[in-house]
Image 1 (cartoon, rainbow, N blue to C red):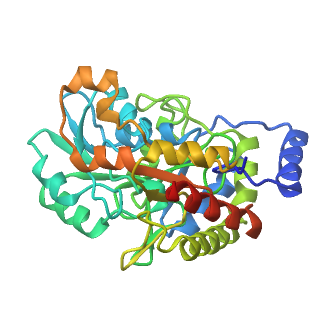
Image 2: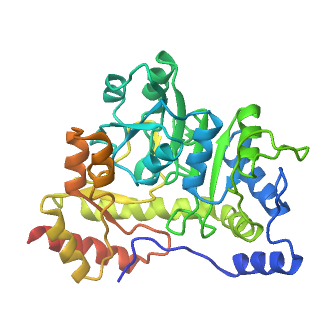
Length: 364
């Protein structure tokens, strides 16, 4: 089976891990973090073009820390798409705030700025645009809406490291930008996350939040948790960051080749709107009779996958909390989307096999 995604690790990561193990410093419970954490934070901040990056132990922790840093909590509402992984909404619930689900646009699978504005109430405090499948949301309109209504922006860039909107990195537009380094992402350290910001104050809060509330002087100044990234994971991340541009180039080449081979196949293929550049984390098409097409692809040893078959607002837990929520574009996308392998490890023969399998599955 050709996997939908896979981590790409080699001797460089092995060497980084072994060097860390030999050093004896597997984690560092200080305000600044350990040597490997600090190195990776500087490298990622430089790549993103932001003042600060604070590493944490997962993308979910990044979202939770971002909400806590902005003092979002009970009585507050946070606007976000339902068409995303449940962690985005779970982070909102974890701080006792209320998620308000916004519909998406079908041309980018990202939050619809017009529906966003319609859903705003006096209790709304923040919006979390998700750059889904590694494709940038319409940040210009989102910034306009947020500014008009005095909303914080927390970008969920878990899937979009390396994607750009008008030549600027996703995760660098809002008050805070959150990233994930889960094994399926464009780079990985097993489990890990990051929060990017240009605010000195928010960076200070984040460093305290990730380490039980301790400030640089060793005093507990606010509530905090153990959200630290360990030194072993940070060593892997530093090695992966050096390969990021290569990984992105290969993903783009693979995506362009798939688009060329699938042109005219009958599926709605992904495309890039003006000013938006995907990192091609996932190559997502839309097809009729999606589940049957998926079954045929699996029989052809193509590890296609559905992200996301059940929107968050239709999960039993969220339906019981919020009742019926009408999101027509979200529900249409959930019934029709299908993601194909596009990761850097694919061979040309595998790309041809994927394209042929898709055409065959659609022809039936």
